[in-house]
Every structure is written in C-alpha cells, then in structure tokens.
Amino acid sequence: YTFMNLGAFSILAWLGRQDGREYTQVSDLAGLAKRQPLAAAMMAVFLLSLAGIPPAAGFFGKLYLFLAALNAGYTGLAAFGLVVSVIGAIYYLNVIVSMFFREGDNSFASTKGGGGAWWAAAIAAVATRLLGLIPIPNVTPRLSTALSRAPRPTGPLIMGEVAPNGNEPGGRVGDSRE
Image 1: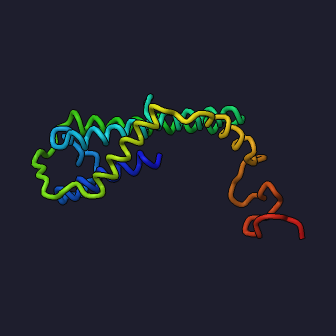
Image 2 (image 1 turned 90 degrees about the vertical axis):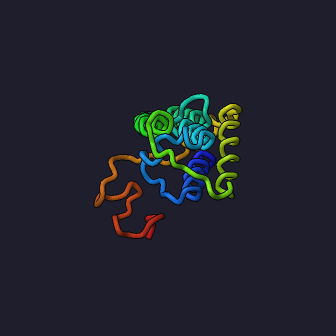
Image 3 (image 1 turned 45 degrees about the vertical axis):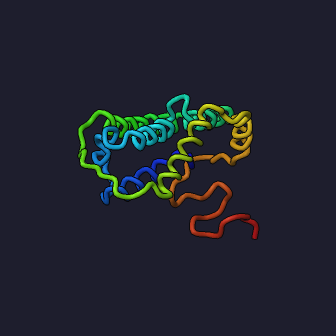
C-alpha cells in the first residue's frame, strides 16, 4: 500500500505543481485522461490497486490479509474488511470514471518540469505493477500465524467497563499485580 498511496499523492502533487491548482475533489480530476494521459493511466493503476482489483498488488495484499484472518478464526474481521473494501472500490472506480469519461477543464498547460513528484509516481507505478504480477510467496501462512497469536477480546469492550485483564478504566495499564 505504500507504493500505491505514494504514487497517487505524487500524481496529485505533480498536477498541482504543473498548473497551480489544488486537486482536492474528484471533479478536479475530470477529463484528466485527455489533458495528461500518462498521469491518468498511472493514477488508474494506483486506484485499481487500492481498490483491490486483480491482478493489482492491492488485490494480493487484501487477499492475503483476509485469508490470514479467516485461517486465524477472525471471520467477523474478514467480513468487515470485505465490506469496507467494496465501499472503497466504489469510490476509487468513481475517480477513474471521472478521469476517463467525464468532461473537465482542458486548459492544462504544463509550465514546469517533472520534478521529484513525477519520478516518485513513475517508480511507484512500476513497483505497484511488479508486485501485482509477482505476488510474494508464503505471506498467508505468516499472517495467519501472527493473527492466531494476537490476543482475543473476551467480551464487548465498551467505555467504562473493566478491561479484560482486570484493570479499571483510567487506571494503570499492564500487569494488574500489586
């Protein structure tokens, strides 16, 4: 996720440096594919990967995490992660639709060079694609082992209740021995 986020924010920084605008709304990216096709293509790679669309790197990251959670008995956590992933994918796909299929301000005039943001985005795009094509082996067993060793809550954790290890809220944290 580091490469995906770094790349997406690098594209936004580069675009802002080129035309002096702030890219803070989805509508600001409307028509980007016509103005800057390479920037739009790289942004699409990052967004598809963040959405977890196969064969992007983000798909494998989410797959490994969800499988590890299921293997460790965290079915609810995996289900919640899946729901949140679907919501995120809808948002990311909306940004892609805006970049490629909606009309926007086509008066983009590049006045500055690529700079560090452009190179950061290009390197992140290559890394994101490579990680999507060459998934890291044996990740699921390692995550499953780590999750199975994680402490499980013994009941609902609501503000004001006694913590599972016997400590009172607002008291000291850690060993409850006197």
